[in-house]
Amino acid sequence: MPIKPGTLTAKGQETRRRIVAAAAQVMFENGVASTTVEDVRVRAGVSNSQVYHYFDDKTALVRAVIEYQTDAVIEPQEELFARLDTMAGLRQWRDVVVARQRELDCRGGCPIAALTTQYAEHDEAARLQLAHSFARWSAGLRAGLAQMHANGVLRPEADPEALALSLLASLQGGLLMTQLNRDTAPLEVALDSTLAYLESLTVR
Amino acid sequence: MPIKPGTLTAKGQETRRRIVAAAAQVMFENGVASTTVEDVRVRAGVSNSQVYHYFDDKTALVRAVIEYQTDAVIEPQEELFARLDTMAGLRQWRDVVVARQRELDCRGGCPIAALTTQYAEHDEAARLQLAHSFARWSAGLRAGLAQMHANGVLRPEADPEALALSLLASLQGGLLMTQLNRDTAPLEVALDSTLAYLESLTVR
Image (cartoon, rainbow over all chains, first blue to last red; front, side, top):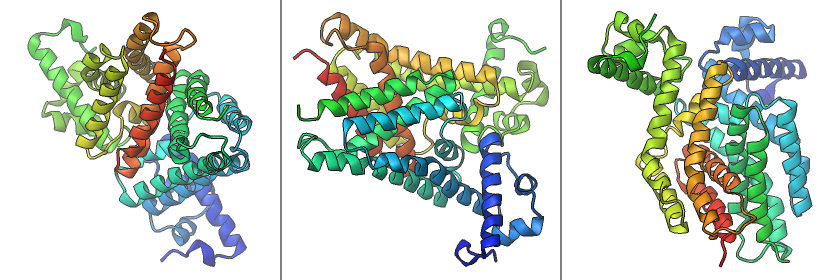
C-alpha cells in the first residue's frame, strides 16, 4: 500500500515530487498512453521499489500528474489573478499568457487540455479531477471580475462567472490554434475578442 | 507502394474508406498512440495485405484519419455556414453545435482537437494538416460574417476573420469543459459570449 503524501518525511516528499515531475515530463512529451511506469522510473532516476513505494500503478501516477500540471499552469497566474479587477490587470494577464507561449515557441499546448483529450474518457476519477482543475482556473479568473461587478465597474447585467468561463474557453481554443500554427496570433485574437466584449460591459 | 485514392476502382475506394473509418473509430476510442495497424485491420475486417495495399504504415493511416475527421466534423456544418450572414443564422449554428454534444452525452470532445493534442508534436506534416483543418473550419464561419460586413450589418471596424477565429476558439474551449463536466453549459456560455460580442458590433 503506497504511502500518502501527507505522511512522508521531507526526503520522501522530495523523491515523490521527483517521480511526479518526471512522469509529467514524459507524459507531456510522449503522451499518456505511450508512457510506462518503467519510462517514468528511468527518467526520475529511481528504483522500481521507490516508484511502487509511492504509487500503486500508472493510474495513480497519471492522477498525480494531473495535480502537478494543474499547479504548474495555475500557480504562476495566481499573482495576476489578484489584479483582474481592472481592464489593465486583465490585459496584463493576457500579455503574460501570450508571452508564455512565445517563450515555448508555441509548442506543446496546454498540458491540462492534453491530459483531458488523452485520458478523460478512460478514467472517470481523472475526468472529475480535470473538471476540478478547470473550475479552479475559472474561479481564479472570476474573483477579479466579481470585484469589478461589485464595484460597479461592470454593468449589473454582466455575469462574472460566465465571463470568466468565456475567457478560459477563448484561451483554450486560442492555444489549440496557436500550437498548430506555431503563432500566437490565434490566441491573441481569441483573448482580445473576449476582453473587448468584457470592456463593452463596463460602465463608461 | 500504396495506391493513391484517385486511381482506385469503386470497390477499392470502398475498402479504403472502410479502413479509414475503422482507424478513425479505434483512434478516437483508444487514442492514436495505443492504436496499432493490426487493431485497425481487425476493426475494418480486412486482410493485412489489403491494409498495406492502401497505406504504407501507421503514419499514413493517421494522416488519412485527420482528413476523415475533418470532413466528418465540418461537412455537416456546411449547410449552416451558408446562413451565418445573420444573427439568426449564427444562433442556429450555435444551437446545432450544442445539440450535437447533447446527443453525444458530451462525451469524446472534438476529434480534431484530440488528434492535435495527441499527434501534432510528433509529426510535422500532420501538424500542418491539422492547422489546415482549423483554417477550413474558420473560413466556413468567416464567409457569412464577411457577408454581414459587406452588407453593412456589421460595423466597419468589425473584423470578420478575427470574429470567425474567436467563435471557433470559444467553441473549442467550450467543448473541452463540456466534455469534462458532461454538461453543455460551458459550451453554451462560451459561444453566447462571442455571439453577444458579435451582436454588439452590428449596426442597430
